[in-house]
Every structure is written in structure tokens, then in C-alpha cells.
Length: 138
Image 1 (cartoon, helix red, strand yellow):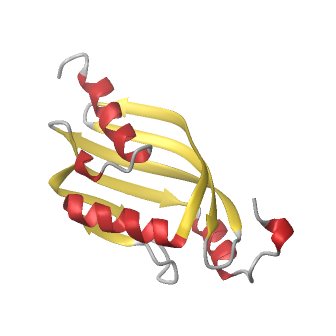
Image 2 (cartoon, rainbow, N blue to C red):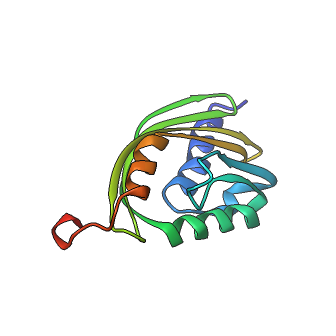
Image 3 (cartoon, rainbow, N blue to C red):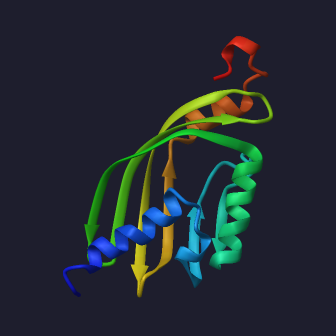
């Protein structure tokens, strides 16, 4: 492994995390985001086409208002990102704050697996809530 490889692996992960670049994933790469069935964008998504579908499903359901990557841990082909977000569900206008961890494996400049671990309790509470009043929206 070259000295630049960990930095390059982080760059690949950042291109998806902050730019939704589905082509950051290998042809056989997987995005795994196991969520309660009630939430419309959980599951296992395969390859760049599957990742594009995931991004579309997520964008159809919510808006990310703030996304923070607070800590990066890189070792070899593994890039772990610890962060938080504030998002708003579109169907009811409810927001939630949640912490998350993304565990990425990068080979040859492509993500071969990304596993998301999310605070699903915060997401479900907001998803299930009645519509927000006009003063509740950001």
C-alpha cells in the first residue's frame, strides 16, 4: 500500500458521502442500510445502479439539512466515518437529529461495501409523527 492510499480511499468515500457519486462504487459494490421496513429507503443496494436507486429513494423521502462527518478512521482499505445529521421527512415536515457510523471498504479506488449504522429510533419517531405545523419547519 502506498502512503497515498488511505488519503485516496477517504477521497472516494467523501465523493459519495458529500456528492452522492454512485460511480464511487465498484460494479459489484454494495451499500447496506438495514432500516425498519416502515422507512422507504433501507435495504441492500448493488452496484452503481442500485446506489443511484438508494439516493433517489432517500431524496424522495427526506431532505438532509445538515450533514457532519466528525471523525475519520482509515486503516488500509477500511474507512470508518462517524457523523451526525439533521434531516426532514417530506411527507410530514418532521425533522430529526441522529448520529451515524458508515463503515466502508475500498479496493482499487472504488467502494466495494458501505454499511450504514443509524439511530433508527430518532428516524422512526420523526417518520411516524403527525405533520409539523408551519412554525415547526426549518
